[in-house]
Length: 313
Image 1 (cartoon, helix red, strand yellow):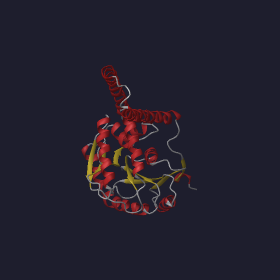
Image 2: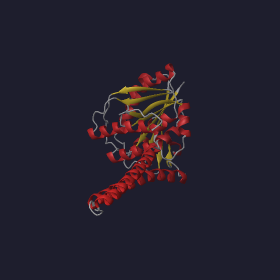
Image 3: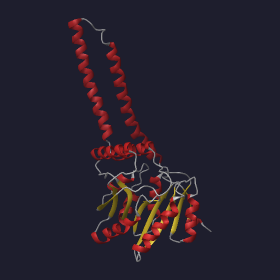
Image 4: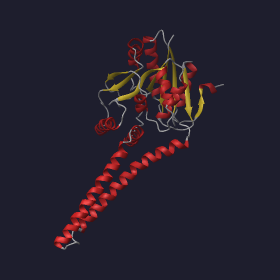
């Protein structure tokens, strides 16, 4: 009998967890009569009663497992912890807010079993319910990163996907500290099929992803899977050197011909400010890559576990 591990990353999701569990059980009983399940809830340092809700489910259902972090380490760490502790033949990543429709799971499972895929992922074809400015920048991000990176990032792709044990082991083998899972999923390869669906709004609670957090996450993705910004920085520096050389020649010729070396100082000040801004921008790009290297070489753990269901007496 096949076993499916369902990994649910949770941060302040006390309202969503009972609703998620109820819907998953409905789908399991309806579509997976011959399949074994386990639910692995990863409590990512929640400040509400998320852990208490999970423990209540654990008391009622032995299929429920949990991992609770010592503090908030982020969704990437939560997903990795779930993957490392999953025992199933097939593993899926889901959010507790039901924006990842459990009803698709049967179709995903059939594609892997009958069509020879290693992974079946999901992507939203609409961003209904999102602020327009956020949707605009999301599309720009995917266009940019696909031009910069050697691995393909699918616009609208969710972390919600069903994977074989072989693919999960490959993902776990990528031990980098600065993780960007959408890029890692593409990096490891394997045969992947995409299922499209309309965007679904949260059943409860509020999103934990502010515009600023998404912006930082986008920078993480670009610096993790592309060195193109460094090349752009170098090219800009070279162009400004050439421009400066041409301007020097113009000033020399103008002085020799017209004898007026002092005019134009306001424009010169503006140019100095502009060039200084470009230099700081380029240093910022280099600093981003150096900071990633700094975090990697410290070799700190990606997450720290405070307790699991195995610690229960």
